[in-house]
Length: 75
Image 1 (cartoon, helix red, strand yellow):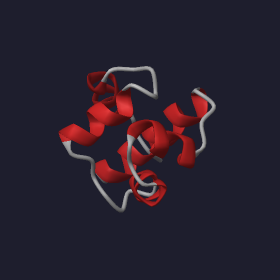
Image 2: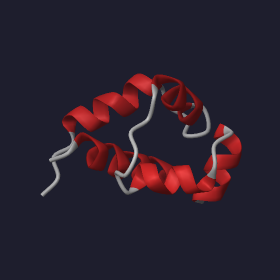
Image 3: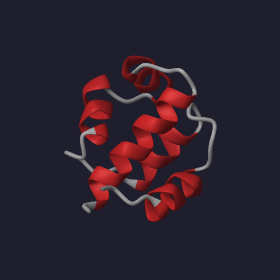
Image 4: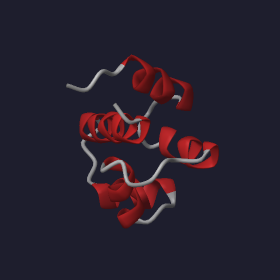
């Protein structure tokens, strides 16, 4: 399965775990809500800078997000 799709699923799951909307995550990470949506749908892939911006409000490390993508298998 496509890495962008896997990342999107991981991002959505982490965002929901911390109880944030896309808009809240975008605000906290200093990213546009539309960009968060595109990431979650697998339409965009994050840069390292974006991973670092997302990690703090999601209460995890960027490396943890990458590890989750690596271990995720989509059906």
